[in-house]
Image: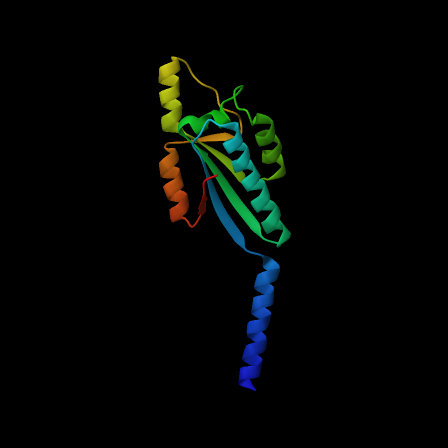
Length: 143
């Protein structure tokens, strides 16, 4: 009788866990100034979100742009600015990280400030941010 009760409790616990959903974490890496790569990264974010939301799960997505890929987040020059603006509104758990090292180098070379899109958050180092995210359990995706 004890094993039957225990089995029932375990089955109920599993059902409750499934009903609550899981949280998935994904880090997407963009390091190329290529609209096709940028769009693929955004497609990855949209597809992952659609899939996990369809399962009743939550997904946290951190997009990290550095090197030539930082152009993805440069105000007035991003070839995917409209998609980023739309997706930021539609997917509240999608965040865009801009590498501070890359930004500083670009500004030094240009001799002036380079504005980023309002959706971008500057992190000290894109590579370090990717390391931190992976250490925090984020799955790593590079389109």
